[in-house]
Image (cartoon, rainbow, N blue to C red; front, side, top):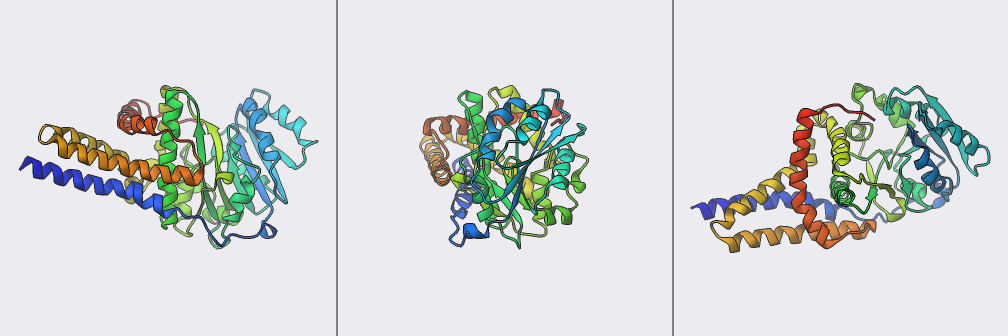
Length: 360
């Protein structure tokens, strides 16, 4: 009897896991009906930053050098004290593209982004962060090639990189999350995005009232905005290698915990289906491992078969996504992180219980 019960539970959990891996992995397909370059609209690239001088020095030139017909860069300095405003002011004049510098009074990222939207000259807006660099000179064009005027929101891919254990785990985690939210968006259920690579129209911004519906929260300028927009339109996705952004992952687990705590602070505003899509994978993965360990004491061969089958599914799905996006992946480390993730998210749960403060 224990064998039948445990086998049934493991099979059910495996099927739920397949929803988070196989379904989104195969939902992502390259579009065959993209626009020609002649149809590309003028674009405003908006960056809100606070004390990001070194990141701007490292990454801003990648945006300035974009091969795109007409675009501007709008930088909102949110009361920086590291010389950001002076640096951008001196850079603006000789730049080959138009650079607008807006001074904000330090009231948070959402207000800073709102200032950027109001200062933008063009209808089409792309948002990124100061610590991000485009993967190529075709970042803007890649995002705009996927822009649908009837559904004016493009969910882009933001890759993370690093060499420490924490940064590699963060990169793995971000890749898995991206595969899932982009895959489900392709299936017609968009529930989140990342602020380091997202595009939408000013008209959509005005229609939704900007961040008004969640202005009381420090975070949510990406996921909560997408959730609100998805009630009216069907966002498109862009996972092309040329159109992704790359940014450094947190190099220590303590920093990653604080960052993830800020990210998940918006989950209270998620609907039940969105909570399932955003958190169901790690919950069912943890339960699967727990049941597999229990099965080991009943029939280790069946337990091992379930574990191997799941790992094959996971590696196949992640391998396909990494191939599509040209994301570096390491088979051995992916196996380690697959087991480590439940431990990390349990630590995150404990961290959230004792520390609910969220900051930009």
